[in-house]
Each structure stands twice: as C-alpha cells, then as structure tokens.
Image (cartoon, rainbow, N blue to C red; front, top):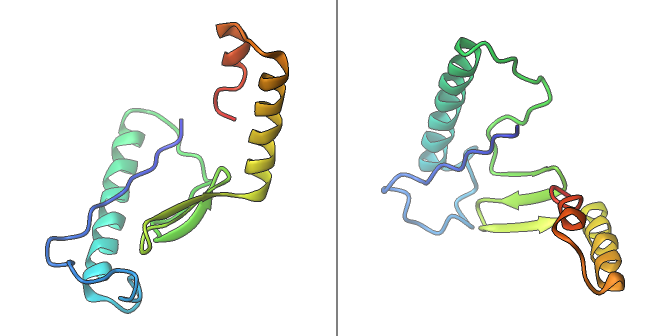
Length: 113
C-alpha cells in the first residue's frame, strides 16, 4: 500500500553525484527531478482512473528524506534507520532471540516492523 519510485539518472549524469549539489544546482539532477514529477503525475492519474483514493500523506520527489523510519540520500547512495526504527527492530529481535525458536505464525507478526 506504499509506493516508492527510484529513477536512474540519465546517461549524461555520469559525474560524481556526491558533489553535484542535487537538483537545485545540477542541470542533470534537475532533468531527473522533472522526469520524477511527470511520472508521479502520470501514476497518480492512473491510480485515480482505477477508482482508488490517494492518501494525502505523501512525499514529493526528493533526493534526501525519511519514510516509515528508513532514511535515504540518493546523492550519496546511502540508506539508514531512524533511531526509533532501530530501537523497535532491536526490541523485536530481542524477543525472538529470547524465545530461541518461533513458528511461522509467530514470525508473521514481525513482518512490516
């Protein structure tokens, strides 16, 4: 029920993206950002044509952000967990380790955490 799109840069964008400055300063990143905005619009139109309702809780196309406790920086090619997400996962892992074994049904309750 969540959609995340990652656009590959254009073939012309072969310089070091960690120093290019992102879509505010780099013409190639700006082109990719414009493509992302266009694709987002097209996908939203298709979703609405299917009769589905879009949630207003959304993130505009960006190169740096955090969604559901997972952070990303596409310029540097990094992902990370927020402190709250890491603590939550550590708690679930501790529960599982403490049990020593778990049934598929018990494991299923941790999916999506």
